[in-house]
Length: 176
Image (tube, rainbow, N blue to C red; front, side):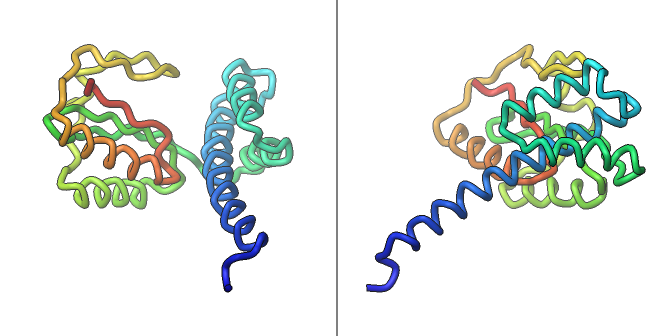
């Protein structure tokens, strides 16, 4: 009766939850590093405070938060925010916000995910026209597109695959 004991169930559940936590922690640490850079390491900066509060709300350990701030102050990896644009199923516009320490790796990964699903990156401004955006805020769709059920499923798959990537912070779409 292999696989029918309490530990095997706990191990499987723990592995899944640990993977989810790790992903959230990684994204929050990247955000903290970028905000620490913008604030020059000043912990009293409103932007850095807001990101730290978001991290605490996501149960990121205090050590991880402090390490991220310290990493910037010691001249650690340089993180940059990059926005990619694409068109998805049914012609819906996608804006993909990323935060990365390696622009080329992230670009290739995004291109690979899109091409796997049968889509490709669009040029700068090709999809962002369908959204309004103020720095530091979310992208809000100005015009929306109604998708068929099949296209909606394809879009859901595409967004899930994109969000599985550690460098992807948010994916915005103008689909209803």
